Length: 474
Image 1 (cartoon, rainbow, N blue to C red):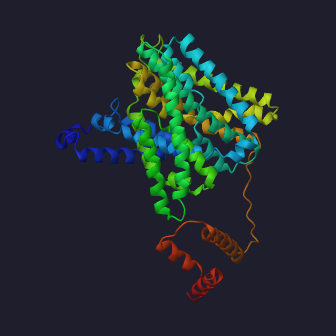
Image 2 (cartoon, one colour):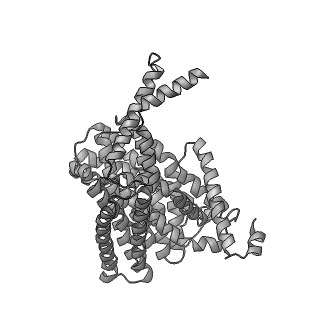
């Protein structure tokens, strides 16, 4: 549609790249207006946008631009992985270490075995693809579940166990994925040796050590920094760790996750994670739209005898069903072994369904290592499954949190006798509490922040009275 314009500008020109990025951002944003009405997550809008404007539909983005945005994937996944580390607080995990370990391992074992059996024995996928799909099948999207927990202000033992299990799931998922990639690569090349298997494991251990070191360095660098500099320093260190991982030929995801995990435990600073979440949406938007741009929707419906005897859409449907059964069944068994109450056994697995973010990232990495159509097969299946899981996954998580008693929907009661003056005083008290919290925080404030604080030092009640008298004079 825009090919004539791109031809005139030159497909690799700066203008084409900038226009393409602008289109991606604008169209991704407008798509979220639709998904918001349908109460669907933004990830669904982004990937769907990529599919629609990609080479297999409207072809609005040149292939040269799509191919040149590979680095965005690494940076976006670094942000996602770092954010996962926030949910792995040692104090919470230590309190439930036994139950978290058992529930996590049972969920992984049951889901992995069922998905591998489905792919390899039932649908006849080759061994390499089956191993990769099994290693990705049990990971959970922490963003969707955490967002649901925050929106509902859910609390309690169920929530603590859930966040810990998700963090452990994703950490083990990255480790198993690294092992699976080495096995799959060896199988594809026709030779699986001890060296081929151990090398990526050792490299991932190196990344874990670097992640630990980076977490402590980040803690040291955050002392008495302004908000702007905190963001600059943290992103610089995160991207550097990501670059080191790419340089040694191993996924940086595990190192970035460990970095976030170490930082939250040694500093207790949740504010930094919020700052990065505010900064990262445009990057994540571009990343997920790019995933959709590379998604060949036609491959779902075309018979491909070299991959499986049936269209991939059939495999995707069974994959979702079996994956849900695996997560639900595994967590049910784990909860039963730990003698958890029935609320855990009946609903815990339902909160583990969301998958899109990190799973799509792992599929994207797998497509780089697998040769031929295998990489495209993995990406097609995982993106399709991830999209569908993101549609009803958060709804199931919400249902599980409600039924487990982690929150209760309550009607808001407004006391008509609560005077306007009292409401103002209550609001002023809250503002003063926030102001005191800011004063007590250990970071440098810029001139504009200090000016704001000085202005707020004026007595709030006096400001209220002055405003009231002004209105009366009018």
